[in-house]
Image (tube, rainbow, N blue to C red; front, side, top):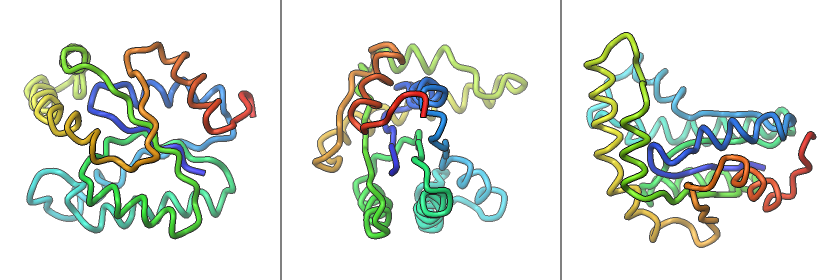
Length: 181
């Protein structure tokens, strides 16, 4: 099984997965951004967004399938994924491999997203880069919020302004996970 935690930058995806991890130690954590970072070292990303690389999407799906099949453990995936074609491509590949996908989307107000993004430091040793990343994250808020209507019908929308503990309780209950295992 894959538990995909989706939402805008600053919605709390990583925070939720960090809350789930000790409560569901059997689960593996897979962040598809690492695939993007590897690809950026190898090829130019013309748009600046590695999700636009077909190879990124194929590798994200293939590695997720491989983790589930090889280790027979649930996989937690904290990743913003809102382009409808990319969602269909990746989730389709997962489902075609027989993987159950639980898709959660954290809904958070724009005001809270901006506040959270402004409060984060992505590259503490490089303030200029830090500001570029914050600006990029904020520029994606509108498209992430608009994507809500295009996500798969079985997406579970969660109030991303609840506490991480409350959200984790909800996710664990919905996927039938037994905390501590």
